[in-house]
Length: 327
Image (cartoon, rainbow, N blue to C red; front, top):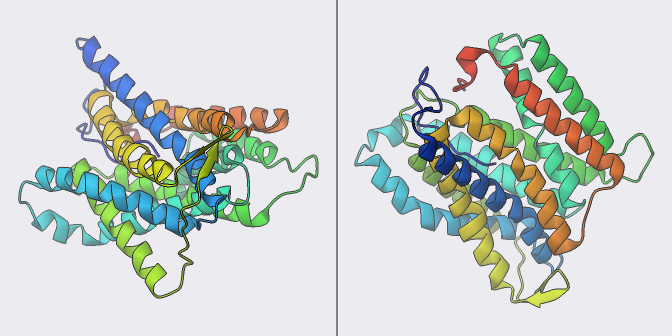
């Protein structure tokens, strides 16, 4: 997930043609965010292979990110504590589903299946958002949106390699679908521009809630918390266990969230979400470089169809709903 929220006023142009430097800077930040987020799966997989549980990796990642982002969120609030009280339910939902739920399910998925298919399944979330808004709020999608969702669904069938009868981890697929639900929740909450929360405050609040939730569930024994100090293997080399953990918290979470927010402020949430699709490409690339994992030809074609379908879904969004989607 590449952007946490957007500060662009509703109805305002996302990009000013008079500010090419601002556009270039925003695009660069969006690419940095996508590349940082995309590294998470490959880094986590190295730790999972040494015996770490998904909840342990997730807890350390978002806990460290919360420590780094929380001061920025407090500064962004500027003493407006009433915003936190008024949006307590929203922060709980965001932290539980979009932060803790999405990351835990994604890391659990890659413990049972390759990184590439897992992230591709997660990124069917925009199509799920369209269906949710249609069923809950009556926002009937246009032909382009329906066509994009159908193409993404076909791509998902190819990514799962269902047509060839290949062996499939049902547990991994279910966890990846759970990550998709968390990702869809992120899009819905981050698109709500009426709550008044500064983006950094939303990011910090979600990270804190997610870390506390996973910590409590681990303490009471509902989620297995297991870690170790064995070195992790990447690209045929052994590295100390704390190296991927530091990168997961500081780079794939803190840097990724903050750069994504900054990108959204400069280029608008719609353009940032398009650039955010590069997270899928970077995830596959990092998995190839660090883990020697590369989807097969059929899965790669399916991945391209998913990306094309998501682009069609975004293009087909109603003009009034491109910059915001009420929760």
